[in-house]
Length: 74
Image 1: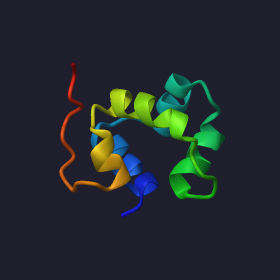
Image 2: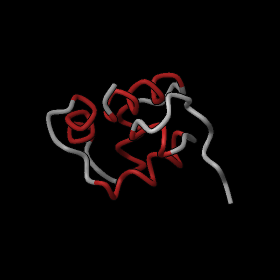
Image 3: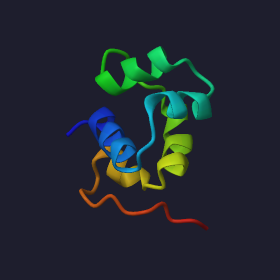
Image 4: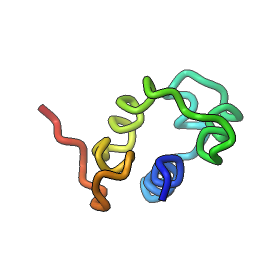
């Protein structure tokens, strides 16, 4: 599974819409949808905020683990 598929899956599990994600990232919903669909490559700068919004580790998002563990808050 690619990072965009993992983000979409976790977002769906958390009942967060693409529009809500886009608003939290301060981008348009259409732009966010293109990232999730893999049409455009998502900038790495969105990784940290996405992990915080979805409360999931970046290791899961980028495929280092298959366990969608909550974000380790320090």
